[in-house]
Image (cartoon, rainbow, N blue to C red):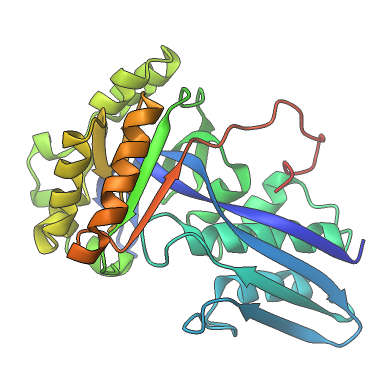
Amino acid sequence: MNRIRLQAYGKINLSLDVLRQRPNGYHDVRMIMQTVKLHDNIDMERSDTPGIVLKTNLPFLPVNENNLMYRAAKMLMDEFHLEGGVRMSLRKVIPVAAGMAGGSADAAAVLYGMNRLFDLRLSLEELKKRGVQLGADIPFCLMRGTALSEGIGEILTPLPALPACSIVLAKPAISVSTKAVYENLHVNSLPAEAHPDVDAVIEALKARDVRAVAGRMGNILETVTSRRHPEIEAIKERMMELGALNAMMSGSGPTVFGIFDDPEKAQTCYQALLSAKESGLAKQVYLTEPWQQPSRTTPGRPARL
């Protein structure tokens, strides 16, 4: 195999709690991750010329070691002393710095692609162990589906899939630093009611009750990001007015998602937010749905990306 085309899927958080800060600065989290069908497209090709060449459709994205894709490729090239090089082309669709793990998804796809292109025969677990060295969300982006994420995000437990629904995503015209959000969280001083009930969402998933899932969602990081950016609450309120079962910020933000059990209401919300782009409420708006894990995968290999 000399070429491979991959899809790198974004994620939302159905619930996100932060338990404590570790002495090393990392935080222990307990959150429910959900892959969505909104995705970036990545083409990879082996090259006889040594080195890594990365091109993107967005001129502001780095194409060197400041890009997780580049670092993922370099990690495996260095570890396995791979001959030749690799050329990669990224068509970015997932919003940047948006709380949707777009960069982590791209890096996960590159790890998978390198594994296939160079026939490294690494299992999913072996790829995840390498991925977490680059970013805490990368193991989930390799696994995909619906999962409870613990530790710094690397301890993953598969959960029943989010029932079929429509999801509207809206990113305001701001970008948020995950590092800055966590630095300003002060988790030890937050009241108990600020912490979401993660277990209640798990039980709702087990019951396959999308209304209950939506009703029990919560994100402790909203206590930081929403306070600084009132447009996040404004988008949530607009989604609820337009029929969302619930609306919440994903990850550290600023992307807001609304869950709909009525596709027509979701379409109406999508169109309304698109029309509101000129007023500055949301800069990027998408209509998507949950990504579901294929029923069959090859033993010892990651599911196809």
